[in-house]
Length: 201
Image (cartoon, rainbow, N blue to C red; front, side, top):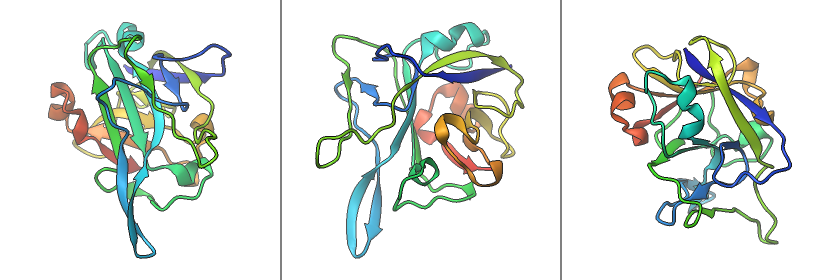
């Protein structure tokens, strides 16, 4: 079985909780990921969009086989601004995305005292992120069409890590496509999280 993801607007603060959008809550030694962009003769680092963070204790009841860690926190980033309604210098389309366009980070321990919210702001100090949505979890079929952790991957020989369905959190993919973050089965089993591959399928 896969792990179904549902989103909910809440009034409570979601610091160090499972959430979609908002700002990631990082350990002090973790860096915000970016991609190198060349545009109009200039080269600069463009921050990836923070998609979600998952408190692994929340998913433990739905992962009896232990395919994912049951402690710590996952963070997911992707170059998907264009599908969230924003202009982007990183135009990723259907098919496989270049290396570095999706990033998964993981920390084994969560510490409310030392973690910090990593906020992106514009020149007027206004937040650049969408309001955070609470993530809740359940079970679903491995081939479920919705947004889920684990389950089937569309690309042969790969194992699904996260499937983001069209419409999730306001995202709009072309022709009802989904963004899939996948690993080789070996990398998923060994926890080589940096080796994630992204596909818009």
